[in-house]
Length: 307
Image 1: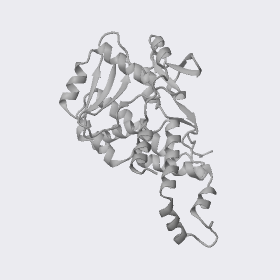
Image 2 (image 1 turned 90 degrees about the horizontal axis):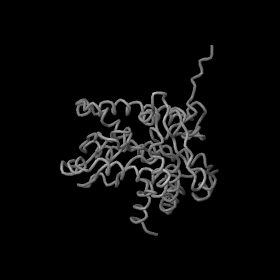
Image 3 (image 1 turned 45 degrees about the vertical axis):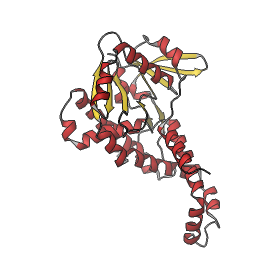
Image 4 (image 1 turned 180 degrees about the vertical axis):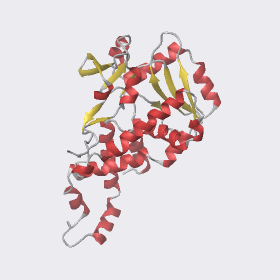
């Protein structure tokens, strides 16, 4: 009998439980992509095999038995608990206010959606290399003190000898730390959460850029908006006035505006229940790139530490 634990090979950057909110009775949703300029391709897909990549979160610098740890030991449990939190959110279950673990799970999920896409990872890797370069004088001094007799003479030589797998391994460790960032998580936990359900014909779509936010989570007028299905969206704000303003927006215009932003920011995919919004997706897909959280942070660091 083979007792080998099967490691996950397909890693979702847009979790299957989230995609499934747009699936029909046959379990499939409509996925739109733009592999060729000016050509939208639509396909019916299962959430289990969409919105991901083979071995995306694989740490190739780690031993084989733990190379999938980020996916199996972190991302997958995170998504599972977030799925439970979403059920409580939609039911307006008071357990979300009592159970800090469940509330934090949803905050961590929101944070993960701002960090886990393939191009997010590339931005983070590049930003970390910038940080290395910026801190080089201090690191060089520390390296000179601690290096062994067989180590390269300088830190620069040492880093030049590191493989891309080692750099990516470090990036994964930082990614996990950032998703679990206690201070940012506390800011989101302490926001006012509500779900706005939409009557009438308007429907939300989603994409691989599903979150609308300014990243200024502590600001008085800050907000986080995430469609959680064709007829509803999760919203987090910092005060009653902002909540009332969002609740008062005309539903058709609000949904239409958010759909344009979400499709406009799409990098690889947009998702919908059917073909009803194909014209909007064809017009908007990728036309309005949004600053990602990592781009925002890298820009902030550059401004704080100019060359």
